[in-house]
Image (cartoon, helix red, strand yellow):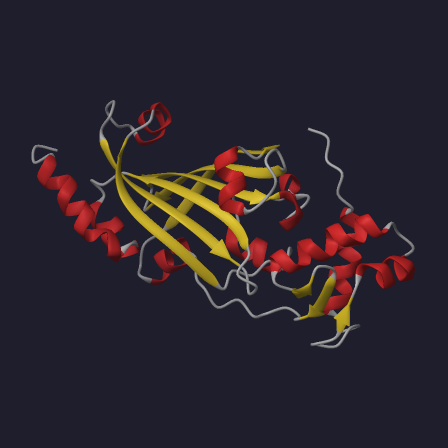
Length: 247
């Protein structure tokens, strides 16, 4: 799909913020900055709103921004936590594509319907055992160029935090029991309509703007792994086991 986003301008603006060219708390606006960078006001507006999403700027009025700077990463990913508790996490990246946001994704990420988003499809493993089928969806402006990164052999969260300066400061997470999709059957080796643990997660920036929407479909029979990684889901795991005592 054709994407009109000023990637190089975003890089320059982010460097100015991170290197302290503008002081914390300083007010900036797209008209003044467009003249400084000699670019169209519309391009500068797009970049500043992207930096607001990523938590580097606050939005004080329609076109008035305030510099916040880069916050230090504080949250561990589930699979960083996995390593600390003695498990060995790994992943297989099945695909990274840019696609138009569906109505559901547009609502969850607060982007226009049809706006470009990255979709990452991954198989998550622990100790060599397939644990989960995971999908991440991210607004394009959060990480332009992600399709060129190695997301199979490095921490995805550390990549987003570090290279793209989009630090997650809050996570909203929900758990439910679902039925295995056709893709789950293939990836997780489950029977049709087998029960799965569904985890839906929204990562937010320092300005409480959506950064990443994640949906994880987990094999519930890996009880020890799941209970250690998602303690809040233990009740649902027991419910699945009670429904399927023979599994």
